Structures are given as C-alpha cells and as structure tokens.
Length: 164
Image (cartoon, rainbow, N blue to C red; front, side):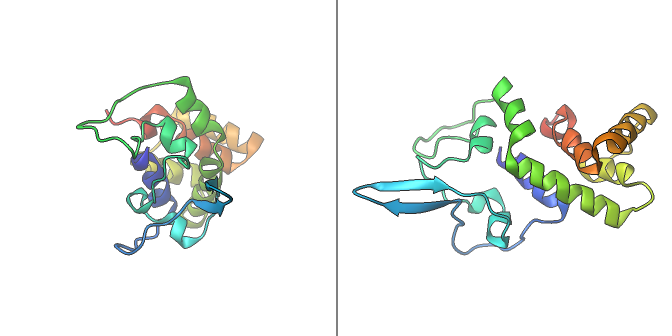
C-alpha cells in the first residue's frame, strides 16, 4: 500500500522529499472522555511526504493503505501478507487520493508533453510507451471523459499496482 501511494506521489511530481522530522498526521484528534480520530484528506505538503513518515494510529488507519495490505501498526509480523481482493480494486477506483492524483498526473503530462500527454502518462507511470491499441483506447477515453480518466485508468492497471 505504501509503495503504491508513494509511486503516485512520485510520478505526479507532488512528492515532498523532506526527510526526517516529525511524522504527519492524517487525522484530527478530538478528546471527549476518550480520544477520537477523524480522518482528514488534505493536499498540503506535509501530506505528500513518503508513507514512511505517516503517523500510525490503530483507530485511524487509511482505508486505501489498509486494503492494499498495509500492516496493522499494533502487531509485529516478520513478513507481510499478500492478497488480491475486490476491496483493493474498489479502493483504487473510488479513493479521493487516487482521484486527486490522477488529476495531478494529467496536468503534469500536459505540461511535459502538450502534443501527446497520453504517451507521457504511460512513460511516467509504466516506464514505457503505450502500444498502438492502448494509445487508441486511451485517446477514446480522453475524448469522452478527459485526461484525468486516462491517468486514473493507468493507476488502476495491474501493471502499475503489481510488480512482476
């Protein structure tokens, strides 16, 4: 989960490279006879640091990372479990972080290569050019729903999510 999140930050050019220092909190704490953690979704620089710098709280886990096998911070494990579940696909399709960074990737690809941003998305996300069929399908999607939808589709591809 952390690798997927960090890869999205890196290829969009939005990764905050700050090292060391305090962890970032992806939640607000409310104290009312107990501590309550309300998740927050932000795009400020602190939230764009690598996942390694994320503060882990048991009752405030990020749904996207949790679905992608991010370990439970309360337990030690010598190795991570590896699963493939429908919840992972659903998280990648509907999570606000993924949708927002698809937009960032579309903007970066347009800025880098205004004549062919679809090709640039493939180069940034998959380190290769699209095949002619992929390029044609992506162009059709771009014309119908916009370039951010193309970036979103690439983020949801097996080639982006899984290492082979």
